[in-house]
Amino acid sequence: MGEEAKAPDEEIWDQGLQSERTRLAWVRTAVALATGGLGAAGLSARHDLPLLAVTGFALAALCGAVLLIRTRARFRRVQAALHGGRPLDSRLDAAFAWLGTLSLVAGAIAFVFTVM
Image 1 (cartoon, rainbow, N blue to C red):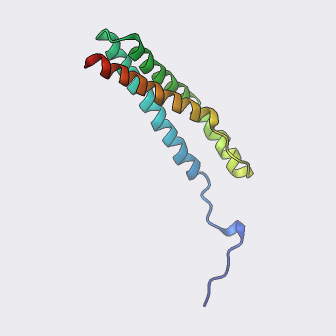
Image 2 (cartoon, helix red, strand yellow):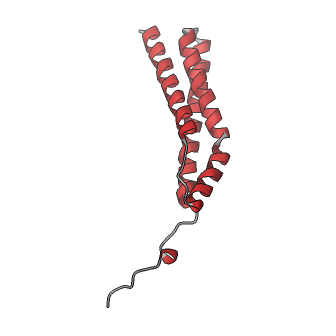
Image 3 (cartoon, rainbow, N blue to C red):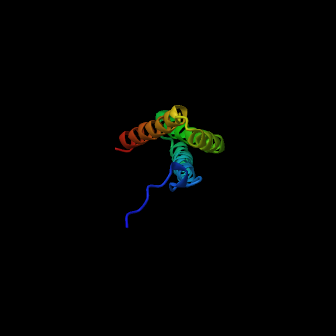
């Protein structure tokens, strides 16, 4: 006996776990940027490292904090887009994540060249 094709309404649809997993990934990214940047900025400032290192780490922490603050609004937008069949737009959040990551890299490069 063959299985009957399921109607679109009967297909397996996860009522929110996809967007919940995505939200948790954004939270992990934001927390890593915020805490890593803040800790590295504090260490750099205490050890009188160049302003570029401190600024890079502080900017990474700021980007992580902004991403963390935007988490709830982003989750609601994703849920509405998924259930409404609209495309997702997270360019602004991706820009903050990239800016934070690049700032962290710039701070780390300045740190390495100062210590060497």
